[in-house]
Amino acid sequence: MPRTGRLMGAAEIAARLRVGETRAKHYTSLPTWPATYDELAMGRVWATEDVEAWIVEHRPDLNEDADE
Image (tube, rainbow, N blue to C red; front, top):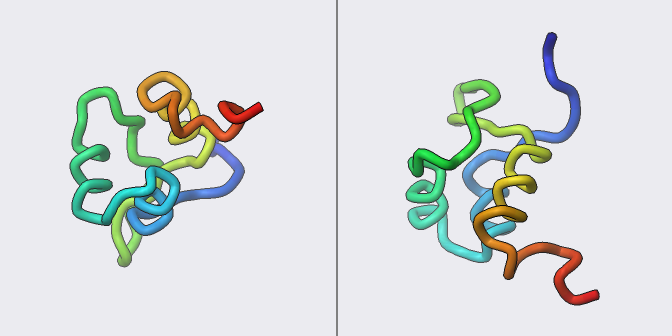
């Protein structure tokens, strides 16, 4: 069953994590990082919901609800 929803590539992940693309690529190589959703000509992409779940668990300081 294919997942639906938004996808994130390296640039979107870097922006969301507030890091450069090199550092973002480091995060995506961690064993705790979500599985790749697909690989396109531009590179790998991940489901946004999976990336956001990872952020909640591993980088709660970046949780968008943390300021509330």
